[in-house]
Length: 116
Image (cartoon, rainbow, N blue to C red; front, side, top):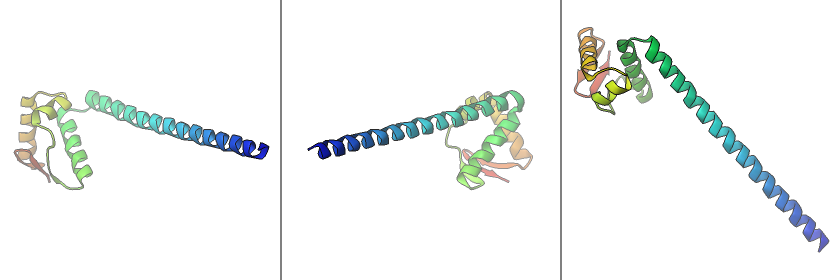
């Protein structure tokens, strides 16, 4: 019976150790995710303060194209939501889109965009 108790104690300690390791790994992962998100927010704030509205729009369009691995894509959000995200008015966004079309940077058909 003593041998069984010893085995049970070792098994209980082993399970407890595994749980502790899992908890540490989960906390480590969570902190990494928060760190990445904080870095993204920091970069966004720098972008908002240092880049012009056209630069922010172009950066956004290139990021979407990179994510979708295609220079032709549809905006997943409304233009009004995009304007809010870029911290510009919808009217300014409209002017920027017209400028990009005129410059031959993009082709725009409602929400469909082709980066040239």
